[in-house]
Amino acid sequence: MINPDQCRFAKSHEWLAPDGTVGISDHAQKEITDVVFVELPKLGKDVIAGEAVAVVESVKAAFDIYAPVSGKIVKVNTEVSKNPALVNQSPYGKGWLFTIEKINGEEEKKLMDHQSYLSFLSSDEH
Image (cartoon, rainbow, N blue to C red; front, side, top):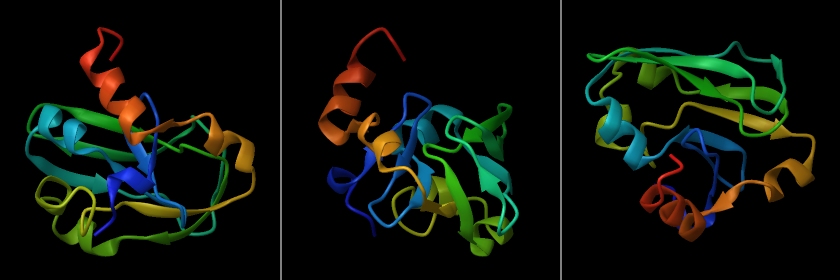
């Protein structure tokens, strides 16, 4: 299980762990409700920060998942493809989506820490 206090967050609700693992926040999984399908990025794909790289589909709609930083996809969570409900059950644990080998540390610094993300959620911006 990943501690959200150690993660950085995008305004689009993806979290980024220090090791490059990416998932969606607890807030996001609650908002989209029951996840029924996950399309993960291809291993080895080079991604750019802000690029749509995966899709999470819930009973409400399909949602793009954006790369929080630029880099290469080095790992994907195939378990979440088999059991999409893991995104709802464990957004900071078994529901992680993919891992990016980061190439630009400056991009990571532009993301919010957990407390800033919680403040962002309580504002009207999200």
